[in-house]
Image (tube, rainbow over the protein chains, first blue to last red):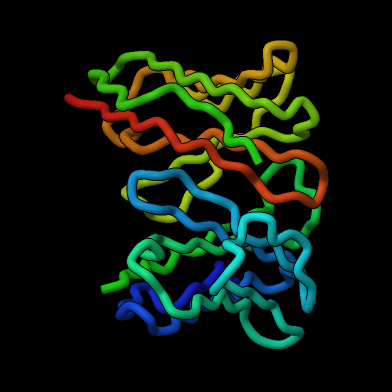
Length: 117
Length: 110
């Protein structure tokens, strides 16, 4: 059973380009969370999605950022017109449960390191 | 969302030492608490859940104090391999995302 798969592992973009980050949750998981970790900072929640639904996007910047989790295929975090401040590690986590009190069912991917030149 | 507040790091300790981290949270409605470990900015991994009754796993002990709204992690007999960043994590109501602290860095030296 493969873990949470994120790709690409590293992504380099020039200012103004678009970045697409993919996350394939573990098999059977229908809950996906995206987090961003800026240099020397902690993980910051961005968005929580279930299949075809955005449950909580309170951590998403108001502009340029969007996320989806279609019925088929991976979850996509899309950043339009990237700026240098978008350079960070983006982690995806998935769970089969909406409420995992033990935390044992939440698994993180290895992350995508986005570098904006 | 308010972040959880963690002890400032780094903690530099010799092998065999006992070290304790504290973390405070502001949301009294938070339901669940965890300690995660992150190595060299790789993905965070669950270290242990934190219960009001305390939780012990080998050299690691976690405690939750709801009255004072803080959680703690105690590491006994530190090993070199314990060197990492330890993240204090809370979750509010069911179905909400985890909220991470900024982390406390531990460096264990021989």
